[in-house]
Image 1 (cartoon, one colour):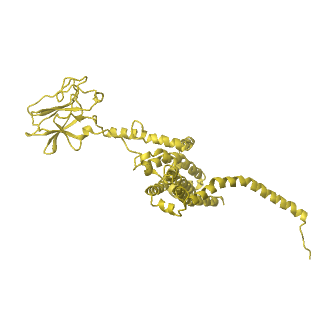
Image 2 (cartoon, helix red, strand yellow; image 1 turned 120 degrees about the vertical axis):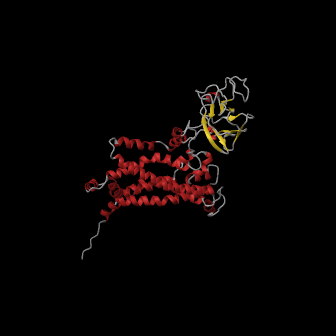
Image 3 (cartoon, rainbow, N blue to C red; image 1 turned 90 degrees about the vertical axis):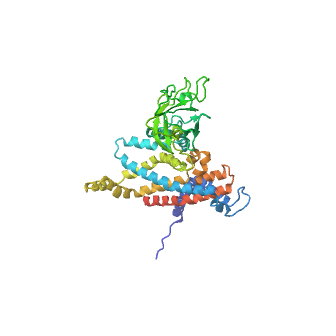
Length: 442
């Protein structure tokens, strides 16, 4: 029986080559490991340890910071808003990306369209936040969205021309609780009333306004609504002076027993008349709509709409990203399956719902989970777009962590606990994405 042995001289060079390869591999990996440890592992471990200490870091408090998270109303609001972000933003983005990716395939200038939609990704979150903060301004003269809303509103429903008008005191007009004005004394057919108002800048009086005038008639109630102000002074309060102009376009009502029985609109000289009134007494009333403030639009950054408004800004930035990724998956689909379905008589909607979407399911899942991870960390847009008074209404876990730690709270123990909570919420999505990626590579 013969035993074969490997010469020592032959094995030694092989071992030395293996050790050399290991040494080279470690030398290449070591800088990355050191960097990963310094920038990721150490901060995570430090934050976990810091979360068990008080605000100053000098006293061990155990799990008190974690209990405080769920007692603090601001933190509960942040958790609620984070849940809204996780559910709404990735769902909308994935849906929009899918629809746009399918439609882009049918557009002649597909590349230019993709470039246009992807361009917001080149804008930093800081710049995007400033852009949308200006776009959401409540003043229609500054905010483009409210300018559009006000324009549409005024096109269908006119606004008052005299929002600042008010009756001169002591001139026989009483203001109602709803903002309307009515004569203090009753009037009957054959009467003439002059209703003087102040508070209207002369420049805001319509150009067609003429000098005010009123004449009595035996069987009518007549009157005039005018600006009781004489340019240069010298006028008499409560009396129509020659240089005082009427206020055209005002709605006037004749009211009896609490009901409007006749309506008129003032002429360019401010005059109005009610004919064919039954005998008796009436109150001349100017409805509150004459003095309603102009429509100012929507309070986009108010407590009720600030979170949807910021999500809208986020959609503007990330829709192109979702479209490009889904479009890449769409381009790799087997075209023969799609064409076979069309030849069998399937409509485009049936092809989309029964073939395209199921085949794209892995890509859609990756895009959705990636966006979930991203929205869990959103900070810049909320911090920049939300005004100070509604910052707490828009806060999410990332912004709350910063506010508690550095933005005035100075409680880094609670801030570290919030950071650990955020990490625990992100890890499952990261693990899912990594496993999905490994399965696709195998």
